[in-house]
Image (tube, rainbow, N blue to C red; front, side, top):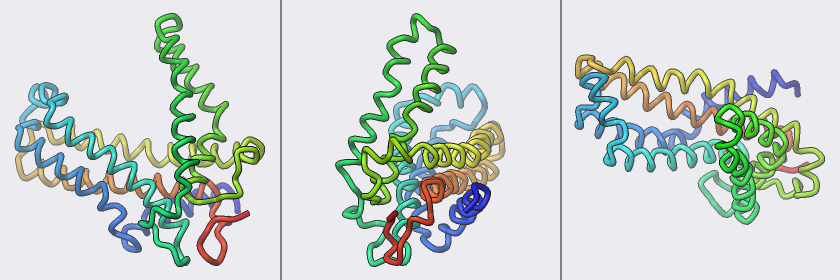
Length: 241
């Protein structure tokens, strides 16, 4: 399958999850909207001064932590939905995940950012960004290995991922970035549009924004699966080579 075909499948998949498995986007849509309820009641959208003053409010931040966790879970759930579709296992069943590999991949991927943190004082913010980008590209197979754990592809071993994990990792990164960037911009704009607006308009914008975040999750999760390689699914719905 061509790269364009994979990307088209990613978009179709991210949209179709909404009616094939509506519980997946709801994982993050509901926490996002709960945070918006708190923000509106705090008066955060009264004007820009109120927005800036309450942006770091502990009450808002506590809801934000829950939302970020929910976002990650929804992304993973969307990927798992496609990986298990048509098989006996269900996307919500955690036993299909290679947990040891997943945890190790997350830890190793997190270590990639440490050199930039340690050297920022000497190389500056721009230097750190360049270093982070270089190290991320140099360790793309780690991301592929992480996704293989989530999708239960046991054949993508540590040895194999450094030989054949570069292209899937690059596809995942590109697909996710292309879909994430415009929706993230829209997510930010809804908050700007809500500042000083009529209360009814604020509520409508925040409902819309919650759906935007849900779409972010389903598209990103689909990018993980289709970028990794949808053709690896066998008739049981599991990934294989």
